[in-house]
Image 1: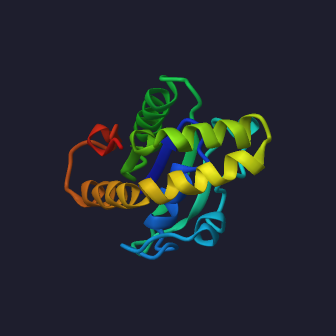
Image 2: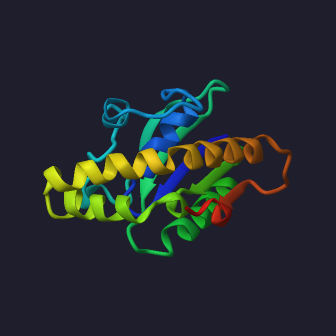
Length: 170
């Protein structure tokens, strides 16, 4: 199985999700500023990284975990799904792929923080908002990851599963 967490920039909620998925963050505990800023790729990616699959590691079941920033494009995930289905057909590839959207978990202050920090380069204003936003939404992201893993473990006929996660909005 392959897990791919996706959102607008691919550097905030997706990085948090990957860290929870890979047990790099303490479950069910508040996150400190230091915990947040040490998350791999958190607030590090730029617009040049949009559309790139970023490998974060393998989980306890040896499943690879990736993230991707899709920017404002609504066609990236459907296009990736179609590409995966084509590869399944042509290459006899049998791996199940789960695309999980983390965008519904983003609080407003995190959106503003990301714009200020990544978009405008004003870390002195953006990073504190990103930290506060993460502290507000991290438990919701952890729930989203647990649901993503639960769905991934289910027996399904679909080889590619796209989770929009609309029930996880903040």
